[in-house]
Length: 220
Image 1 (cartoon, rainbow, N blue to C red):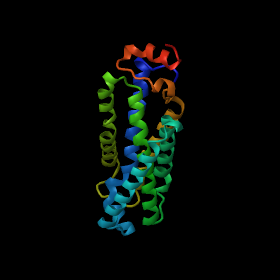
Image 2: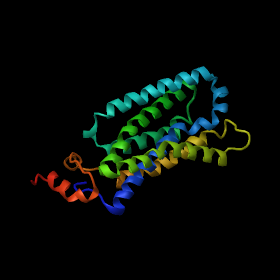
Image 3: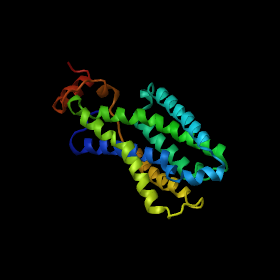
Image 4: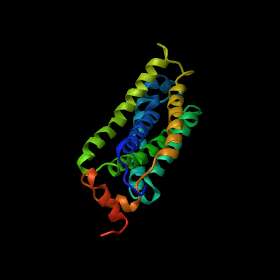
């Protein structure tokens, strides 16, 4: 975007980013409601799962560190690519894993993509918000992880029978994968980010938009 988004379009872009954040959290943690079934099926112990979460968290941290230097790749691009990765792994890689090793690898990939997006989405929220409104915008962004847990809990409660079986827990991931596919298409065609020239300008309040855009064009 060569001009700063205002009005409904700005709210629309912020809403897309927040929804993407919710979907990311949902895809990563979709199977948490069925761990009591996943553990015995693959012989996973609590210690093994705890170690897996540590390794997966490190993968997410590495991704976040790498992508923090990737502004030139495009923040919107990182969100779109991350959604695609999460959709593929939530739909096929995790549900169709043959053993606990493949399940562990797929989980680490989900965390890796999630770590990258946790750099891209707050950066987009910050770019679309002048300094005087940034606190409110970032407050809505933090709804992403909390709302993601709420969605996965609500879906699990509505879908799973009273007794969970190995035949149906995969659907928890697939439901989130379907949502990720829809969100991927939306972001691919509708999500945009500010040009580097506009993004580098400091804007305290929304009424300074014309000044910021003028400076971005090199006007004194």
